[in-house]
Length: 295
Image 1 (cartoon, one colour):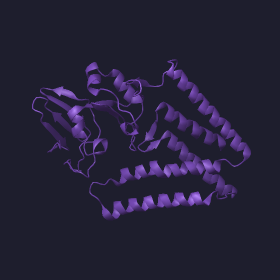
Image 2 (cartoon, rainbow, N blue to C red):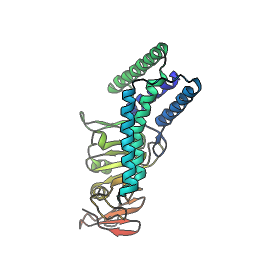
Image 3 (cartoon, rainbow, N blue to C red):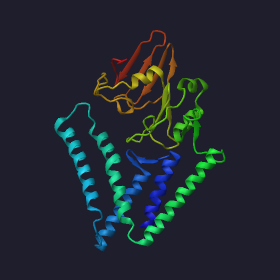
Image 4 (cartoon, rainbow, N blue to C red):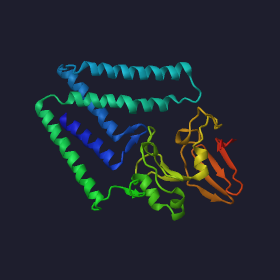
């Protein structure tokens, strides 16, 4: 069991360190799959040995209250209030990843370590993993190793990995110029609960359906990105309480911004956006229906 905890710790540090978080499906990453396996094995061990002893009951009660309140709120909004722009499935996935998974990590860390030998083993492994990460960080800083593609200026530099790095590497100079400098911070880069990976730039964004290296990524720019980011209702009509971006009714980009005649055009899973730089007109089509751009 302690080897499983060490593996989970190494995976958590590795995905955070490299920025690579491979997924097995929507809402299920490799590290989450390992977490759920550890929970199942731990539950079976407790059931078979009958040696379960509750530790720090106050903390367990706090987790139960927190998760219970969140679940009741989700059920109330999903089944009773029924907001027309509310997405129960997306909210459930967010609840799982941001709260329930955290509770499971706490549960595993608390109960896998049973003896002093377990504690020493896990502590030594943790020190080793952190030490290796520190060495790799230093070698990366001096240019000996390369962990992803670094873009941006000193002090505002980001590291691109997976399909985002591949797309930026293959982008033309005009596309890079249009994208501009990368934006930093968790809100401007990362992985959505749906598995979508993204990196925001001053003038656009690069997105991909998941973090696998073979997944195609696309560049969305300027006014088309602004129209894509307009909150919209399920029918595509602009709505203050609607959703936008990849979670919106247009879905993910399925092409870069391309020039078609006088227009700049980008296609999406459920529609397209056309922009005329000469006239400034923007046409948004969602599920074959033209809707207001909202700009």
